[in-house]
Amino acid sequence: MTTTATRTAHKKAPSPAQVAQRTADDVLRTEFAFELPRGYVDDAGTLHKRGVMRLATARDEILPLRDPRVRENESYLTVLLLSRVVTELGTLSEVNPPVIEQLFASDLAFLQDLYRRVNQDGHTRAVVNCPECEHEFEVDVAGDGLGEL
Image 1 (cartoon, helix red, strand yellow):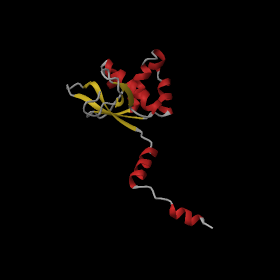
Image 2 (cartoon, helix red, strand yellow):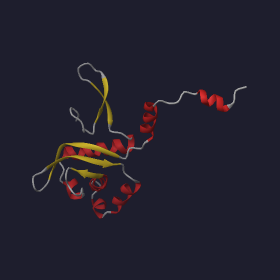
Image 3 (cartoon, helix red, strand yellow):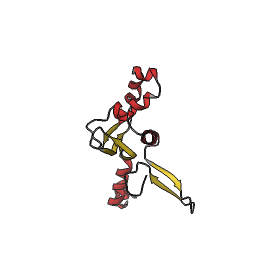
Image 4 (cartoon, one colour):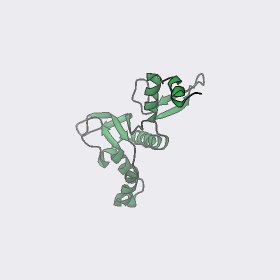
C-alpha cells in the first residue's frame, strides 16, 4: 500500500526555470513602458518620447465623465483619461491634460491604441505578417526596443 507521503515524495520537483515562469505568468502587469512615434515637445524645446502607462481603474474611467469639458465635448474624455493613466513622459514632472492636448495626432492615436491594448488585452503585443514572406510573428507595439515601432 502506497501512502500519500510516499506518492508525494516521488513527484519530480519543478525546476527553478519552471517556478520562475509560473511566477512570471501569475504576476499582474500594471505598468507598460512605451515610446511615442513623434514625441512631446515642451516649452523649452525638449523632446519627450519614452513614458509609462498604468492600467486604468474604474475610477479613472468614471471621474472624467463628471468634468464639464467632457459634457461639452465627448472627445475630451480621451484627453482626461490619458492624463490620468500616463504616469511618466520623458523628464516631465507631471503629465496633465494640457500635455496630452499638445501631443501630435499620431502620438495621441498611439496612446489610445496602447490604452485599449493594455486594458482590454492585458499586453502590448500584436500579431503581424511579414509583407514579403507572409510569416506571422509578434511585435511589441509599445516600441520600447530597437527596431520596433
